Amino acid sequence: MLLPILSPQNNTIVSLLQRCRTLEHLKQTHAHLTTTQPSSIARILSFFAFSHLSYANHVFSLIPNPTVFMYNTLIRAHSTSSPPHIAFSLYIQMLRNRTFPNKFTFTFLIKACSLSLSSKLLSDLHSHVVKWGFAYDAFLQSGFVQLYANCGLIDNARQVFDQIVERDVVSWTALLSGYAKCGMIKTAREVFDGMPEKNSVSWAAMIAGYAQSGSYEKAIEMFNEMQFANLHPTQATLVCILSACAQVGALDQGQWVHAYIKRNKVPRTLSIDTALINMYARCGCIENSVQVFNQMPQRDTHAWTSMICGMAIHGLGHEAINTFEDMLSSGAKPDGVTFVGVLTACSHACLVDMGRHYFHIMGEIYQIASGAEHYGCMVDMYGRCGLLDEAWELVMAMRMRPDAIVLKALLSACYNHGHVGMAEWAAKRLIEVDPCHGASYVMLSNVYSGGERWGDAEGVRSMMREKGIAKVPGCSLIEVRGVLHRFVVGEKEHPLMREINLMLVEMGRRLRLAGYVPAVKQVLFDIDEEERENILGRHSEKLAIAFGLLSIEAPAPIRVLKNLRVCLDCHVATKLISKVFEREIVVRDNLRFHRFVGGSCSCMDYW
Ligand code: ZN
Ligand code: ZN
Image 1 (cartoon, rainbow, N blue to C red):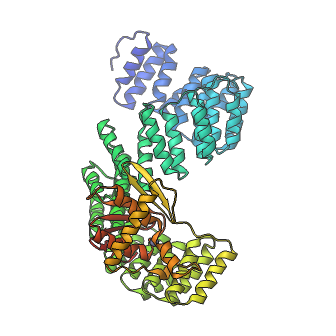
Image 2 (image 1 turned 60 degrees about the vertical axis):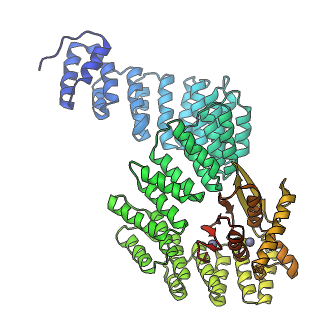
Image 3 (image 1 turned 90 degrees about the vertical axis):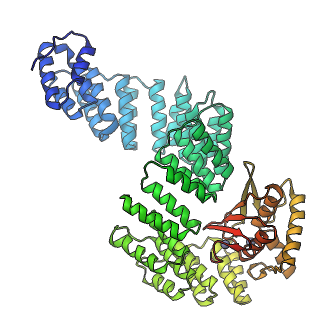
């Protein structure tokens, strides 16, 4: 092989190496260079370190006295991908060879350490940094703030941060996201507010912190403020906001984000599209989900699963199953969540044989162990299709002890079919499994009240009082022109309360004309009939619907999100409202969607 005459310039060496097509060719060029230009070895090493790491290791092993630059090159190459101990053993080898580390050595070691998140390794590294005199290097300090925070050692993070003389946006953001990750959202916010300068990473950390701690409305609020600050959200922030919108049913806001993505030509990644599918499905706009899904150039398990689960919670059983079959033919692999969607779909469409079939192949063909959610779906399916005995047998045949999900499904099934005996069993187990969860007591008490066993109902109520268990207050959200309004049961604080009260009276009048009789049986408190009716009339979803009728123009549907299961009375009332007011009403409760149109509901009165 003929080699060109070499100039000693480094870039020529690199371009010469770059021109090699095979590793063999590279090795030959390398051999040639070592004989003709011994001084080029550092360049050669850094070339191989980022293209052929194992060959770089070999090149390095032949160097008799590597310089700190050479050590750093190899440590850096190992810091991003290899197990962290390789970078650290190079560091130890370096010290043994009496080569002194510099600031960059530690920068790369911090990076290696972030892959392992071992607090022992971290504190060892920190003491070395101090020993070599870099304790006050702001860049390294920022790195340690981040590392300590990621390891959950927030106090150490704070200590390092407090020692930084010149704090920049990176160190501030590291501290802020540390607090957010440890769930100390208030402190994170204090740090955020105290920052002299913020960039889009700082905003992203704060928004993610709110979303992770379940403060979705706060996350959305921050996102809007970020727009005013004229900063561009990162892709991760957009995904985070879309899922916050999905959680609280903020459709207008979600649509705004979708428009933003289109307007700013944000690259359509799998995670962005999947977040859009989820957001539309969970905000009650399944058509838009399908549209996004159909336009995706490629789909992974998450994307398929989101589509299937979205269709399932909307009661589109057949569509969900067809999508699942398409998924299988596309070669994508279903996971446990996919099967939750498929089984939910079978339940909604009462496809009992198919449900059994999918439940069976999940374990047999896809080797996915059936979890409580899958059993819950099956029990729900049997219950919905009136096969109470099958539901019972399945629960009895479970290999694990039935947990809250399964018991709730069984309880609902018994409750809907008025089987007091089985319901009593399920509710008592549910209270054993989850003694602090108010809903189990409420359901048991409701079962007794439904069966007119007032004494037993009273017994459950006094048990609740003795144990100091509070009923979770009902709460509904409704979005009007991009603003979320929150109503709790018996709400009196809303600025438009007077108008809402008038609307409630009007609703009551028109419903009674249409033959509505309040379903008071379920109300469990020690109060007389009239007051029971009053409490039912002020359930949070009724307030939200009244507000929706006042402030959302027809024919746009009224969308409400409720934190608890919709009660029987609200269900009956909402069906009638959709008829007498000629409005489509979509209510998402903690389990599924109810789409009320013309006096009937998409759940077919089973939920
Ligand atoms: Zn209600
Ligand atoms: Zn319904």
